[in-house]
Length: 254
Image (cartoon, rainbow, N blue to C red; front, side, top):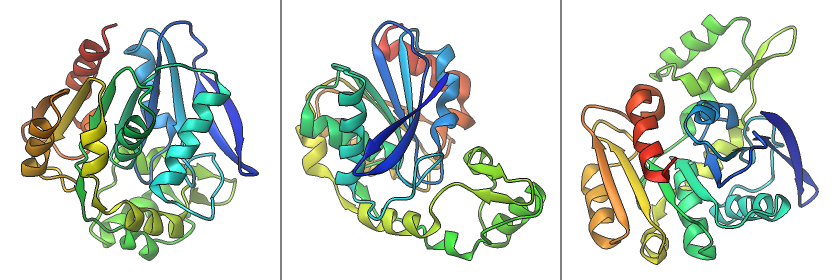
């Protein structure tokens, strides 16, 4: 995949593009993630694939604001920059809210895949401020996360970079706290406004969404197909990779 950049408000967004012909799928990661976490989708989607490092993540710059509207405007800028019409969107967690908010606002989305996030959100990223800003080894990262009760999820590895002296995270520590605060709340108006086909995926042991809210999303928007992953957590694309790929491939039709 080719690494590309885009200027938004005088700052840089970074993204990956497989530059294939065919229908476009854009993937949006969650908090603390990066574009590379969805690189496996090259083997799932036969058309064009765009993977965005959302603001404050990956190789994109750290921005002064992290409102949902900001993320949605970034996505709109990417779509306009690449002159894409009617892409499919896949979003995990933060990326899921940004994806369905974009679909509600603009309508020019062919299909929408939402991975384990609801319309009623109340979480905190305050824990990230307890992490050091640099690490001597990757083992130190794992131990630091364990010390504050966090699992060393794959996306925590994917967002690490070594500068020749220390390991550091690419994401904006302070920005992640602000971003989660902005993301919390009631998103029902956006969900109710979506008119394209939706695939909603939910893990029954997720810490980020609850089954009652997910079931209500299925009932309130008739365009929704719901698949429940019994016993799975929040990162279905890692925990249940084979099934996740098959479900997404079946939904997008290639």
